[in-house]
Image 1 (cartoon, rainbow, N blue to C red):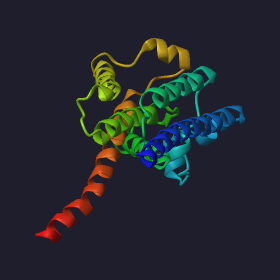
Image 2: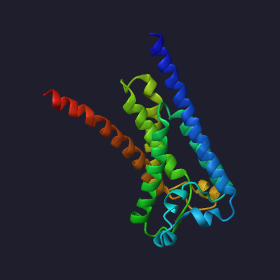
Image 3: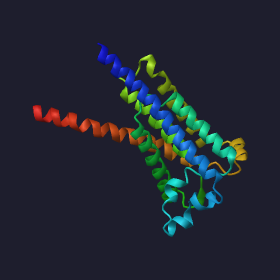
Image 4: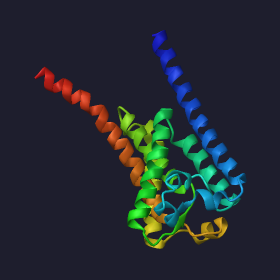
Length: 218
């Protein structure tokens, strides 16, 4: 039994280490960018700049912010997600969620919101992490209705409520005033859908060997 307990302890330590390593890395990058002069103009989502080939903006737009309040608000949201919902998510999938959500949001803004000329901020990707971490926790559980899954159910429920409120009532005016710009609530929806799709695709990929094994047995 000792090796089992040792493996369980290592897995818990690994997941705790991973999530704070991820949180620290993203926070440091965002803060360094915030100190960089003209970073907003150089790195934000800019439709005209993208049209002439500045494709780095597809990802960097999610790491640059309108002001310090915008930056710290998003980093606080990242901290909450890492603390409350990360669970046993491996670091590689945390990075995958971040990159996939960022690219999907930028692509959706390009194709579905052609009137939007510029965008900046981490909030859309945070919604991808939010939905992805909650869904990962539920999919990994052997008994999804066990009380240990309660944080993931609560996280998923609160995310749905938030998205519905933004859809029917629009984004928060207080938040818009605080960050000194418009809140692009569409990015929140795109991010949440991207995070959920990432986890569902991961689940499908993991199921393929099982189906192959079942077919070979037949």
